[in-house]
Amino acid sequence: LMDDSIAKTDGKGLLNVRVIFVIGGPGSGKGTQCARIVEQFGYTHLSTGDLLRKEVQSGSPRSKELVEIMEKGQLIPSRIVLELLRVAMVGIPNTKGFIVDGFPRELEQGKEFENEIAACEFVLYFECSPETMKERLLARAETSGRVDDNENTIRKRLETFENQTKPVIDYYDSQNKVRKVLAEGSPDEVFTQVSDIFKNLPK
Ligand code: B4P
Image (cartoon, rainbow, N blue to C red; front, side):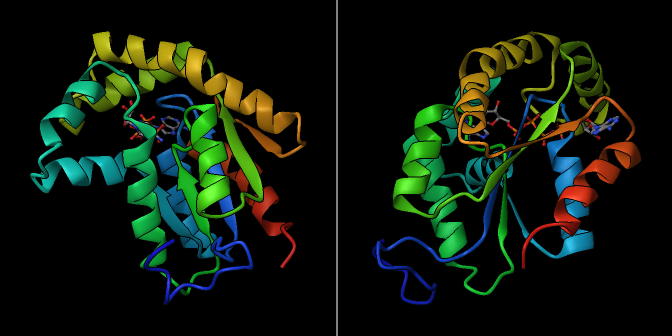
């Protein structure tokens, strides 16, 4: 890390802060639940999807490339995602911890983050059926204006999740780091399970 003078780091140069990864398919309710975690428990929410959409809106030279990838329901190159996260985290030196939403979406992303930025305490996984996810995203499509909320892209996003993100869950599961939440229910029902996890975290 080059510009981490304001953030605390450990002996290996990693940020010394609680980090929780939040994974789930598109439409599993990650963003919705993260907003509630912030409200109830005071963590800092970083959504890689939001960071990427902000990057696009800023009119950065890579905007066009990013939009094209998102429209195809594919993953943005990890380097870009990691850089956006690193800059965001270093800029917030005093926080109880970060919930990193929509990340990692492929195995290498997670490994690189943990080698270069900070260790992850556990992975919060929202398990949801593809039918439910599709239904929610189509409902959101009516108002979201998002380039990726349409039937075609939703199908591809679900495939990307199945092929590239599911192995991430298996990997962290093998390290006993996955906390699974059943995400089929209403936002309140899902949050009951999420609260139980956050209430019982060590200080
Ligand atoms: P994201 O922005 O992460 O999009 P998402 O998976 O749909 O999650 P989001 O948080 O928006 O939706 P949620 O499930 O909460 O990613 C978009 C794209 O960015 C990716 O396809 C990829 O191209 C790129 N990208 C992002 N991160 C990346 C990374 N790390 N690496 C590479 N590329 C990356 O909610 C969906 C809808 O369901 C909402 O309308 C909500 O109101 C509704 N809903 C939520 N919970 C509900 C419930 N319990 N009941 C009923 N409806 C519910």
